Amino acid sequence: METIKTLIFNRFRILSLLTISMVLSIVLLMIRMKLHQSFYLLFLVWNLFLACIPFAITTGLATTSKISKLTLFVSFGVWLLFLPNAPYIVTDLLHLMHSERHLMWLDVLVILSFAFNGLILFFLSLSDMETILKQQLKPKFIVPIMLSVFGLTAFGIYLGRFLRYNSWEIINNPLGIFSDMFQLIFEPNLEAWIFTLTFASFLAISYWLLKAFSNSKCN
Image (cartoon, rainbow, N blue to C red; front, side, top):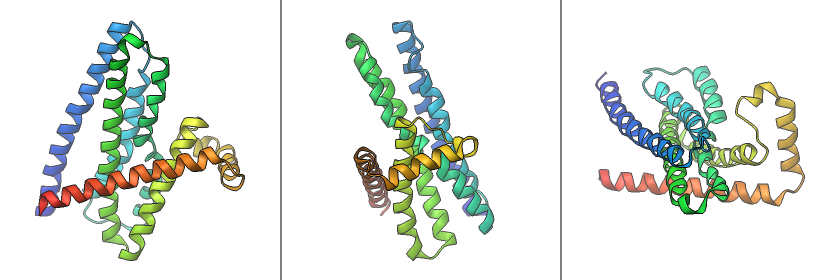
């Protein structure tokens, strides 16, 4: 019981800081909208909302005292489906090519602030899931699962950014998405493979670097 109380307290502190950070992002976006007299980049708010979903899932799991194997399996599947939405915001930097040069600095700041929140949500959610999996599975399975998560997340980002698929299309259009996935996997697509490998490497190294830094501060 004491552990759960401590977890809830820590979660409240993290949520408070995240809320402040996300409010700042929205304020920056509103300033941008006022100066440009344009709603361009407003989609970042929706993208940030989607980025919150995997963190909400792992927060629910982390504050549950007992998790059944079935609950974990289903939750993990839904979590993995929405997880790419969190680091996906980094690729919104591509929209800078449409920015006006004299205020590009503001667009850079706006997109980076949203992307930063997306990455923080991704790392926090991933850390929660790793902890949960360590409680439920044998240690030998953890590293392969984590490596797979990084790869699948990067591949999911590619599907979303370049093939314009959304997370819920696994239900609305499963044949289309699986057809394109198999084509990318079995027919050589250099861009898809390079993107997946490089983005997965970036996420993995960043995550383990932050974990190492966090552990060193605790010791």
